[in-house]
Length: 393
Ligand code: AMP
Image (cartoon, rainbow, N blue to C red; front, side):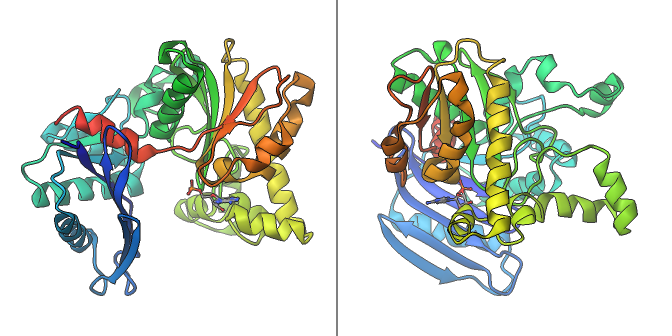
């Protein structure tokens, strides 16, 4: 019998859903309910390769969306064995996936002070799905758990230690399910045990992070207290001078929330290019000589290269540098520009292999004589969530 798992990822105004075979990673159903709470709320999905779209009642919320999703799932005839929920922040409590009970729900709510938009939406999704599927095990898989192996030197900020002790102010790391998937995949590709596999993995999507993984354990990562630090992202600024939020609040006469919005939603590739947060649009514009797009791509790659180079310090037994996520898997330009900074490390790309690696076709893209291998590996966060949830079924 197939071990099929419903995977839910509830955002503040969207619910992504899938039915995943926990053993093969195959997705029979994938979909998204979007614009929840708005007049144009809608639901689109792909079932056995066929695309469908349906309107949701005006201002439909998470409950209406999840009810509609439950109907679609029922129509497939699949008998799911568990439900896996993506939860963004698991603080220091969760070092792995957990079966949902009252104490788990309470903890997710507690950590909402650190990821308010994300955790509260995740919580809503869990509670609504519990009502729709009372007999199935509900399992939470956290973005942060994979990074609970980080040593203190990597996760403590140079701030008064009382802020860590009393308020949990530290670096947590995010995109853990993706980095874990890349680690497991690379162990298979290199034919090594996970515990002997060392990589630097760059997850480059709308959100971006690089992780240093030494012998199967995360030892550093670029996202910190919330998913904002580190790399340049689609609309997020990544590293900036810590004095800037206060300065901007005064200069622009804005509130702390407005500045947070500016750093999270108006910065990154979008902010620099003054054109788009979408890498494809920027690449097309750059070809036409758009200065903002050229600068955004240049800064994105330079920052990324500096992080990868920095993490070489943390990964002495480095097997490979790996690119993943929408940009990492598809953009030969971003990979080429980033790795161009590594020629004097003896790490060069095979131009043809780099050009060919896209649309789900990963593989080794470094030149034969490169001192460190470079790979493209398509990520599959849903599979990680399904596999973890299946262990509780
Ligand atoms: P994700 O969040 O992983 O879905 O990634 C979204 C990002 O991937 C967006 O910036 C897209 O522009 C980018 N992306 C997807 N396909 C391509 C492509 N063929 N070339 C460049 N960037 C791409």
